Length: 268
Ligand SMILES: NC(=O)c1ccc[n+]([C@@H]2O[C@H](COP(=O)([O-])OP(=O)(O)OC[C@H]3O[C@@H](n4cnc5c(N)ncnc54)[C@H](O)[C@@H]3O)[C@@H](O)[C@H]2O)c1
Image (cartoon, rainbow, N blue to C red; front, side, top):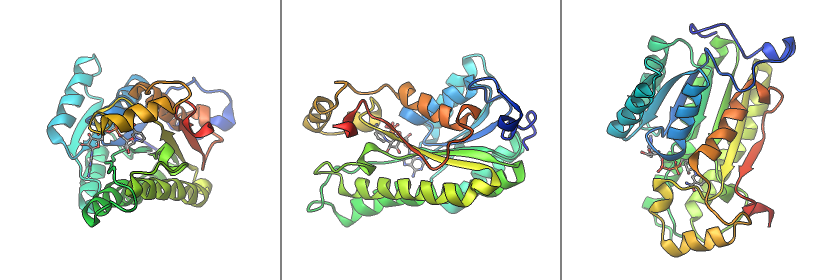
């Protein structure tokens, strides 16, 4: 288990654990410079974990880590340049985590990019970009982190999918495909890794107020919010709360699930 504090992955069998505490856990978060990933990193640090923040935006990643440090939590965040489509970058990411904290036992595969074109408009470039980051990046993250979790004696993983893995939209064809694959990989990994006490779950957000959605066409966002029963976008911390729950011992018997956090969008 990690070098920070004793194991928490097996405590469920021993009785109640302190709710939502992740003290001593060692977490990897991809796409941590911005939006949902940044909120997840903040929540993890607040819950007591050591966190390695990875992002292709190195400057943004360092800024996010510095802000967490100045929030009074020095030494528990480490920023690393990470392109999730690069297997060797994942290896460096893991090595940094081990050097600073020990074997990581939590992973949040969060990095993502969106393309807005439908089936008849999607280009090869858009398809490649979205599939590479969202789908292949998730696979490479799983492949890099799981051996550490074996050595740590267990772990928990959350893959950030999307409500677009569940419903069609008439747009964003490559993104639907990639997030559907993330949902399928989540279930496959959950079944394969359960005997090793590694839980794997997904969170599927609806529309969230982040730099990703501020870059979308205004009408697309307006229509999406209008179709959301709760009538608004989510704040990143509302998605982070679901991620943290699934990582925590409060979710000790939950694996292979896909938690919609979408204000009721998919329920209509
Ligand atoms: N915002 C939403 O409405 C929404 C809805 C459903 C799902 N999601 C998913 O949530 C996740 C986070 O999205 P967000 O809204 O916070 O977006 P965001 O754009 O604010 O953050 C995404 C982060 O990923 C990083 N990134 C992009 N490509 C990368 C790469 N190759 N390697 C490493 N990092 C990379 C970006 O630099 C950025 O910091 C994504 O997987 C996204 O698909 C978002």
